[in-house]
Image (cartoon, rainbow over all chains, first blue to last red; front, side):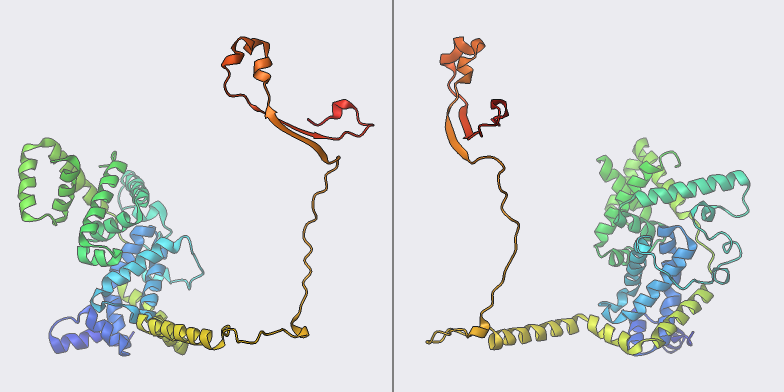
Length: 207
Length: 195
């Protein structure tokens, strides 16, 4: 990885560079500026993908693919300051299409990338939802709850699911979610409301 | 407040996106209405549940190195092709390319397209005559004799039926009678008559 472009800009201006600054630098052949964008958004990207797919391996692969795609088509980004929303749109599209259009990918070294508690349980399904170290009954309940929650999320229409994942779970700003979903902030509020309402019905016995 | 309105306000209240005036109104309703409080409690529990979903423990620094290396791999492979592709996908470039294609197409149409007829008729030479033979499906030939009689007229069978006879005068609409007859070869028995 290149030396951080963010550190250099931060040192000279006293604050972290904006997304728009970093995008402009990447477009003028400052490859290191993109590493700063990776560091800035990789957590959100993995989180969104994981919430949509329920599987660590898939979420990491989608995240990598999304950054590759973002880098190669960065010149098409209209609003440079909206990089985050744009990237998460790529992440959510890739995640939603992941099962349908699965292709052979270069395998990510999971043992190397995941913490010790994760590297042996990254096959998706219920195991990922278990609270490590809890007593067996609690772990079983937690796994069941996780599965039910995952199923309930899958039953939501696409926009409602994305709005719930990005706004309610990941607590991203509504404006960023709106950019990601390509809709207004008011529409995001509406999708969140509809999603919450439906989830409340689907999870009636659990809450 | 209607149930949907109340629930919408509650979700925004929990998200912190409800404006000041509506927040005060909602808090007043929550203080007075136990059902509204129960709804708030359910949504709060749902929010807690959603946020309790654990995330995988990722070594973020290693992941960012890995992604960065993948980008370097991608960059070093077909660089010229990639940069061409980026340019080609820019909307301005695409618009200019489309305009050039359109103008070229129109120019070719007017320069090379069909010419206006001249005063002298153009007679094509013998080398321009071509004949095409197309073999299509053959016509279905009937097995029997050709139809010799087609007769259309009132049937009157309702009126002739004994059960309807008393009402014969009241029947205003009678079904048309259609007879299509064909000649019958002598050797064929009358029961083989197709109608």
